[in-house]
Length: 633
Picture (cartoon, rainbow, N blue to C red):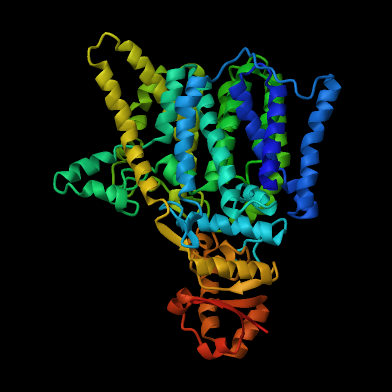
C-alpha cells in the first residue's frame, strides 16, 4: 500500500503548509486546508514531473521532493521548527460537536454509498449501485489506462489515436495509488473518502464564513447534501390512487423524488447523483470551496498572500473540473467589479487582482489550450445558445420552485435580509445562473447543472441564514417549532428518500463477471500496454475498464457526450464492417488503424453480424466463458 502511504504523506505535509500559512485559524480550518493542499499537490502537481518522465514512479518521487523542499526552506529561512503545531487560535470555524454530529455523519453517508457502489465484489466479479452503473466505468477506463500505459499526456482510451481532453486529474490521483500498488477498488475509494470529508467540512467552513452563525451553517450543510425539492409531493399525491408508489422509490430505476422525469423533477441529490458517480464534480467542488473562501476573505482582508494562494489553486482547476473553474472565473469577474467602485485604494486592489489573474493565466492557459480548447473550439457540440435549461414542460418560476424547493421559495427574502457583502456574492452567482440559462456548454444539456450547483450552494447558505433569522423573529409565535420542522422536512425528505434508494441499490447491478475479470487480467499481463483493441460499444467493457487498454471505439454514452459525435458515427460504421469483413479486409483495416487484437463476447455476437470464418482465421490467444481474444497477425 505504498500509494496510500504516499497520499497520507502529502496530506501531512499539506497540513504543515496550512499550519504555517494560517496560524491564527483553528485546527479544523488548518486540517481542512492542509488536506486540500496535499490532495491538489498529488492530484494536479504530478503533471509537472510527468511531462518529463511520464506517469511513472520516478515522477512521483520527483514530485515528493518538489513538494517537500519548499516547506523545509521556508522553515529554515524563518528559523522555525519543522513541526511547530499551534493548537490555540484567534479565529474559530468549527467545534467538536459540529464535527461529530454534522460533518462526520454526512461524510459517513457518502462513504457508505461509495463503498457499496464502487467495484463491489460479486461472485468473483464486480457490481455497482444505480448511480455508478454508467459513469464509473468511464472513470475506471481512465484510471487504468493512465496507470497501465504510463503516457503523459494520456491517450483517450475510448477512441484510439485521440488525446484525452476530458478533465482527468481526479482519475490521475487514483491512478497514482494504483500505480504504487493499491488495489483498483481502493485506489478509487480511498481518495474519494478523503475528498468527500474535505468537501463536507469545506462547505461548512464556507457557510460559516458567509453567515457567521453556527446554526445557519449546520442547516445549510444539511440542506445542501440532503437536498431535494418538492418532488416528494408527487409521490404523496400518487399514493392516493396507488399505495405501492412508494415502493417504486426503492426499487425503480431513477424513479425518486429528485429524479422523476415524467413530472419534470430534474434537480438531482448532490450526494447520490453528483458526488458518488461523478468523480470530477466531487473533486471540482472540493477545490471550489477553498477558492470561494479565499476570494471572500481576500476581499475583506486585502491579503495579497490569499490572492496568491487563490491564484495557485484556481490555476490547477481546469483539468480537475472545467465547469467549477468556469463558475469560479465568472464569480471572480463579477466580484471584481462589484467591489471595485467602493474600494478606497484602487491601485493596490487592482494590483492584487492582476497578481491573482496572472497566476491563473500562467497555470491554467496551458491546460486550456492543450486540452480543453482542442475539444471545444470549432466543435458545434459545444457552446450553443439555449434558454431555460432542461425545463420543457413547466412555467419558468414553477420549475425552479418545485426542483429547488425552499431555496427557490425563500431566496428573495434571503437576498433582502443579507448583508452587503453577501448580497454582492449572490449577485455574482446570479451572473453564473444567467449565463448557464442562456448558453449550453457541452453536448448534454443536463450537464449545465454543474454551473447551477455553485449558484445553489450560495443560495442555500443565504436562505439558511434567513431561516435562522426568522426563527428568532418568531420567538413569541406559539407554533414556530412546528413551522421549523415543516421547513426542514420539506427541504430534506426528497433527498433522504433518494439516499435511501441509492443505498438499497448498492451492489445490485453486476458490471463484470468473474470471466470478464480473468479476461482483463490476461490482457493486462500478456499484451503490449499500447496495443489497440477492436471491441463492441458496450460500456461494461473489461478491455478498457479493467485492463487499461485503448480500444478503437468505446461506448457512445461517453464518446458522443465528450463532443466527438462525428467521429463516433464514422467509427461505428467501421466497427460493424470490420466484424463482418473478410479476413483480408479485416487485416487491412487493422493495419490502417493500428489494431492488434479483436475481442468477441456475447455483446459483440448480439450487436454485430460477425463473420465466423474470418474470426476463425485469427490466432486465438485466450478464451474464457463467452469471451474470446484474437490476435491479428
